[in-house]
Length: 590
Picture 1 (spheres, rainbow, N blue to C red):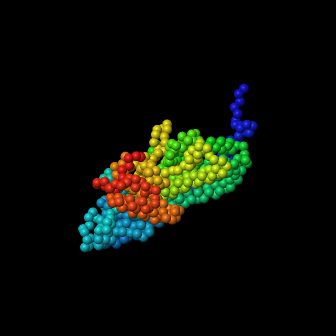
Picture 2: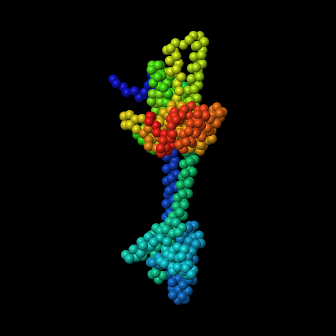
Picture 3: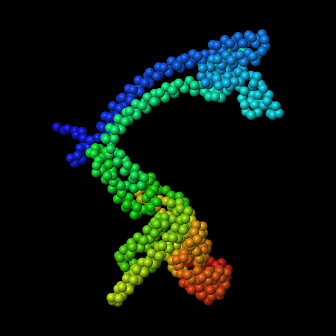
C-alpha cells in the first residue's frame, strides 16, 4: 500500500522542515501575546468610553445659553453692550476644562460677537472694529471684511456656518457641530439665541479629547512592549538554536550581494534541515551561474555584463552618447595569414590578450573584434577623461607590440648562433613581427543593443566610429603608430599636459565632403629627445604647404628627418600648388 512520506530525504539524510519548528514556537508566543494584549485593551477601553461621554456632557451650552439671555436683558436696560459681552466671555472661560476649549457667538452672516479660547486668546466685536479701522486707515478700502493684510474677521469655518444656516432654514436651532478654527479641528454643540441673534457655540479640540486616547494607547503599548520583550528573550534563545545556520547562510548571501559576486556557502557545520538543503541547492545554482557568467563576460563588453547582472535582463535599447572610439588594426595581415596559416590564430590570441587587458585597464570596453582589428569604446562609464584613457591605451598597445617584436628578434639571434634560418623560417619570422596602427576619434554616437529578441549584439554606430577606422588607415600612409582627431586633442589637453599633439595634415578622407585636421599624440618624456625639434621643423614645413609655398615646404620637409615628411615630398614632387589650393588633401583610398 502506498504511503506518503512526510519528510523528504537527500540520500539517507532526512530533511526536517524548519517551518514546523518555527510554527510550533511562534504559535505559543502568539497565543500568549494576544491573550495578554486583548485583556489589557478591554479593561482600558471601558474607562476611555466613560471619559469621552463625560467630556461631551461637560461641553454642553446650558450655562452659557442661560447667561446669554440674562446678559441681553441687562444690555436692554443699561445699554452697556461691551460689558455684557465681557460677562459672557467670563462665563465661557469658567466652563473650560481642557487646554484648547473654545466658545464663541457668531451671527448668521458669520460676524463674530465674541470668541474665546482656554489659552487666553479672545476676540470680540469691539476689537474687530478697531482692527478694521486700523487696517483701512491710509490704505485700500476693506473688501469682504478682510483687512489690508488679509486678516479675516468672520467665523473661520465657512462650511460649518453654512450647515448651521441650512438647519436654521429648516427650523433646527441647535445641534452638534464639527468645525475648524485657526487652532485646529474641533467638535461641539451650538444653539441659536434669539435675543442676540447669534449661534452660541461650545467646542473642544479633537487634539485635547484624543489626548486621553493616546495615553491609553501609550499604556497599552508599554504593556505590549514589556510582554514582547519577555517573549523575545525566550524566543530569541529558542530561535537562536533552531536558526543558527540561517544567520550563517544569510551573512554569506549578504556578503555576496555587497561584493556583487556569486560564491558558494560553507555548509560544513549546518544541520540537516530544509534551510541547509536550500543553501546546498543555491551552491549548485551559484556554480552554474558563475560558469555561465564567466563565459558571458568573454563574449560581451564589460558594461553590458554589469547591467545584465544588476537588472537581470538585456533589452533592445540604446541612445546617443558622447564617447571616444579607438580602432586598432594589424598591418600587413594578409601576408601574415598566408604565411602562418592556422597558426595565425595563436598569434592573434597572444596579441589580443595584451590589447584587451590594456583597454580594460584604461576603463575602456571592447566593442567588437573583427579578424585582425579591434574596436574599443571609452566613456561608457561616464568618465570625463575618456579621450586621455584612449590615448594611454593606444600608446601602451604600440609599446606592447614593439616589445613582442623585440622578443622575437632576440629569439632569432639565439637561433642564428646555432644555424642559419631557412627561407620558410625567414618568412615566419617576418610574419610574427606584428605591427599595429591605431586611430582615435570621438563625439556623439549611438551606443546600445540592436538585433531581435532571439539574437542581439552590443554596438556603437556613428560617423565618428567610421572616422576612427579611417584614421587608423592613415597610419600606414603617414608611417605613424597613432593618429587622432582634433576632438581627441582638445579633450586630452583639457585634462593633462602629458601628451603633446603635433599636427600631421588636413585631409578629406574617402566618403567625406570636408577636410579634417589629424594629429600625432606624443609623450615627450618617453620619446627620443630630438623628436620635438624635428616636429617643429615639420610643422613649419606644413604651414608653407598649407599656404601654397611648396618650394619652402619641400625644403623644410626634407630637413626635418621624419618618415612622415616623405608623404609630402612624394605628393608635391617638383610641382607647384594647384590653382585654388585650400591646403586640404583628398584621399582616394580608405
